[in-house]
Image (cartoon, rainbow, N blue to C red; front, side, top):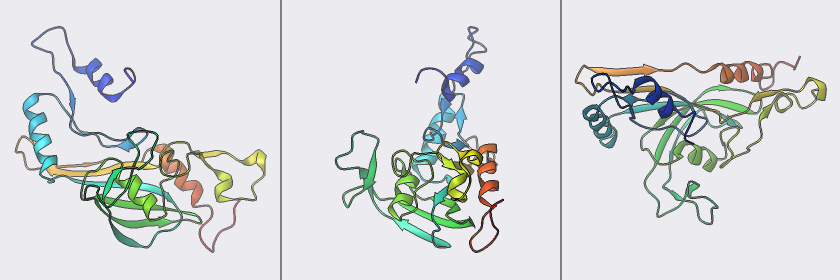
Length: 221
C-alpha cells in the first residue's frame, strides 16, 4: 500500500520543502495490519539506530491484549519455534516447526466470557506473527484472524446463538489484537520510556457485548 499507511501520514506531517524544517520519520518497529496500539516513530537517523539497538538487545518490554476464541488456562508459557509454514500459499504465513527460530510468549487471562477470553501477552522474542501463531498453536486463535483462525467477523449471534437474525450485528470485524504497553530505556538517555495505549472503541464495544453472557451466568437480552 502506498497511501493511507502510518508512514505515509507521518511523511505528510513532518516532511518539508525547507531543509531547515524537514524531518524524515521512520518506524522504530511494526505492527501487523489491523493490529491497533503503540507504534514508535523516530525523526532522525541517530535515534532510529538507538531504537533498533534496544530492540536487538531485547531491552524493550511489549505487552499485548488479545481477544481469543475459547477459554485458555489462567496463565501459561508458550515456547515453540517459529518459521515459514510448510506448504503455505504466501511468504508471510508462519508456523510452528522444529527447525524454526526460538520463540517464547507468556500470557495471563484478564477476563473470560462464554466462548472467548481477553488475554494479556508478553513477547520475549519478536518473531513474525509470533502471538498469532502461538495462540493458534494452543487452540485459542485470535478472533478475526484470516491466517491462523476464523476470518469471519465476530457476530452477536456468536455470543447468543438463539438471537433472532434481525437482531444480529457485527461486534468486531478486524484482528482482535492490541499493542497495549511498551517499556524501554529512553533512546536519548532520559530514563525510562513507559507508554500505554488504552483499548480502542471497537474492542471495548466488543468486550461490552461479550459481557452480556458469562459462563454459567446471565442470559442474553
